[in-house]
Image 1: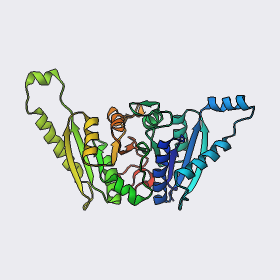
Image 2: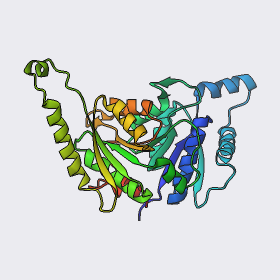
Image 3: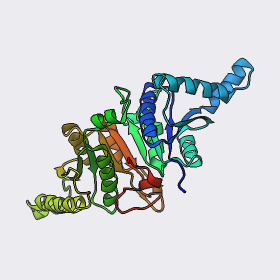
Image 4: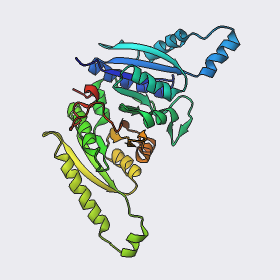
Length: 315
C-alpha cells in the first residue's frame, strides 16, 4: 500500500507565496493530495515578542494567521478532496522547509522564487536557492505573483509547452521521461533542447578548426533524436539545438516558444549530495516560467520518469 501524496507549500505571507499556494492548491486537488502549509518564524522575533509584551510567543497565533492567509489567497474557496495541515516552525527557513518535507514524507515542494523581504541573490529568493541546493525531492518554483491559475485547465493554458533542457548526460533520459509524462497528461507539446557552448580554448584557436562547432551541433542533434525515441507515441515532441550561453539560450527558447514550464535537473555528486548547478541557478534568475527542478537522486528509479518519486505525476 502506497502512502498518500503530500505537497509542501512554505509561505512567508508575501504576494509571491500567495501565488505559490494557488498552484499548490490546484495540484493537491488534482491528486487528492495532503497539503502541508508551512510558516517559519525567526527565533529572534519570537524572543523579541516575549521581551516586548511579557508574554510567551504562542505558535497557535501564527498558525491562525497562516490559515487566514491561505483562505484569502484561495479566494475563500474550500479545498475539494484535500486534507490541509498548517504547521509553524522556528529557525532558519530553508533548513526548516527541508526538515518538514522529510518528516512529512512530502513528494513535492511548491514555493515562490520571490519572498517578502526582497533580499534576493541573482534575482530570486535566497531561501528558495538554499532549498534547491539541498533538496532530495522535486521543487516547483513559481514566478512572482501574477494571474495564477485556479484550475488544472487554466494551468494547461498557462504552460502551453514544456521545455526540458538537457546536457546529454546520464540524467537526461530521466528528465525527458518526467517532462514527457507531464506533457502527455497536460496534453501540451514538449521541447527537448541542448545548448552547444562556444569553445573557448587556445588549442582550438591554434588548430583553426572551422567545422568543430558544426560537428558538435550534429552530434547534439543525433543525441537529442535518440532521446526522443523514448517519448510515448502520439505526444508532440521536438528537438532543438541552440548555440551560446546555456542559461541565456534556455530562457530565450522558453520565451520565444512560449514554454510556461521548464523541467531542469539539479546536478550533484555522491560526495557532496544535491547541488544546484550554475545553469539551473541562472535559468531561475532569467526566466519568468514555472521551473520544476529535479534532484539528482530519485526516490524511486524508473527508466521513463512515469512513476517518478512515489507516484507523483499527473494522471
